[in-house]
Image (cartoon, rainbow over all chains, first blue to last red; front, side):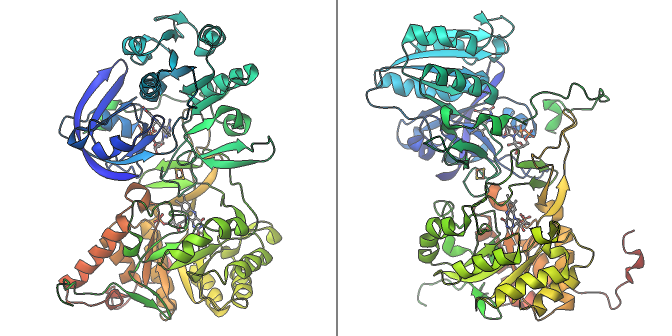
Length: 295
Length: 323
Ligand SMILES: Cc1cc2nc3c(=O)[nH]c(=O)nc-3n(C[C@H](O)[C@H](O)[C@H](O)COP(=O)(O)OP(=O)(O)OC[C@H]3O[C@@H](n4cnc5c(N)ncnc54)[C@H](O)[C@@H]3O)c2cc1C
Ligand SMILES: Cc1cc2nc3c(=O)[nH]c(=O)nc-3n(C[C@H](O)[C@H](O)[C@H](O)COP(=O)(O)O)c2cc1C
Ligand code: FES
């Protein structure tokens, strides 16, 4: 784990997302697919905490050239601020953090399933698996074509690629789980790696459990520290023998977990998924647009 | 000696028999025991670590979401997740013994008996210089009323613990009371060596889109700069009433000036919690900042500014103090 101040090399749009490349040789050298970094967003604007982002690429070209790439979806104060970062800006970054994806040496074929920006860490994983001559299938899903993560690069990277959008503007209309069974059958994947919204991870993990295919999921949970000291990022995990459970820290024992060991009902069961429907319609609330947040 | 820079003021502080190399310690629940942070922070340059509160039995904690960022603060509702005292001794014991820094073990419980049982099990752990009694916990024997909200209940816990160990006990108080001085006095009479103030303030936040509380547990503890004025006030009030009792002040400290403010109000040392999440090195910077502050004024020790806030000759009567 390293804390450094890194220069922003570039900030590009990729579909609905922003892709930030940082000069961070020390972190890049150690980074493994599935790990994340904690980036400081300015205090001053009432925010107190860093923001966690998966590592999308780490190029370890040695020495000063090592770079790190993260992808962000500008949705709140911190991400809106980061989305405006310019070349030569300096960011305070801690990483690499957490435990990444793992694979057996004799793995032959696998399937990577990404939802939205959840595709980002899977590209890093796909490159590593390809370099070790594994067969890599990929499903990328999103609400619409803008949110399908780097479809063209993905097609180049993966041996098999299936795209789904909920509105049908790219690939097949539907969700990743609609094409999961068929793609598993077609690719003969022995293991599934997934990253995306927690509800998607749950659906993928449950489908894999039915088919008896191991599934590793990279989860998102609120993180105050990201360093393993505060126990904010609790994910309930069932014991290996299926008995007993304990809240694990997504920031150090995760964010990648064995999907069949997460107690999904307890974890996501009561999580508010969408706006209250039976509640009276709230008056229009002023919600600042991203551009408004930064003076 | 030769070649060593003259740093001027010494940061070391003595709290009536317990000493720390700097007056800046890590607050409970925000640093674990220091093991995770050792890779990124030089622990020898901070005053010490107060561990995550440990309970008699393993505690799984509360459902997520456990945190909500609020203006200049955060709410947390972790629910004292910890492996229980046996798990704690196994997992953290060897580190605490070998770390070579002062460690204060924070103990929590839901009954006097639980506090006592944990005290018995950790009192001989090497590396431990003091105990902090987190009495901002609900008391199952008193309809879940918080110990620290009732002088009698608080005194009962502290009395029971202090009969079991010679380790100095710091009672950690909550500001969610009408009269914090009364609780502080009761704890000291029962045998508390010192006082740690303050714990988080109970708060709540509601998502206006979903109409749901932002914490899984509905309410939780507010920490960070948002609570600092309340904390400074508590330290001031207690220090005025009990000038000889060591006070460790905390609540929203993230800069050297913030820490100096607590010392001026009457704290002997400070703890830093939430600010570590943003800046793991912050406690070292605060220590060095205090040193610069003292040097600039020709002072030699943090004790030189303790309780030195210059109060007006006559402090206004309490009746209309709020506006
Ligand atoms: C391990 C991990 C990897 C992640 N990878 C990415 C990524 O590659 N790209 C990306 O765009 N986003 C990623 N996220 C989500 C990202 O951290 C949040 O979108 C971001 O923190 C929101 O900050 P904000 O200030 O814009 O929003 P605000 O709503 O203002 O944030 C308020 C608080 O809630 C937290 N928060 C809000 N949403 C989330 C969330 N979904 N997950 C965790 N914390 C949240 C913030 O960190 C902050 O503490 C990841 C989250 C985790 C835990
Ligand atoms: C995530 C979190 C967990 C905490 N856990 C504990 C705890 O286990 N025991 C305790 O006495 N205080 C706990 N606290 C309170 C802090 O020790 C401290 O009293 C409070 O946060 C105020 O200081 P700060 O504003 O510097 O964080 C916790 C605070 C936070 C933010
Ligand atoms: S975010 Fe603090 S322990 Fe994981």
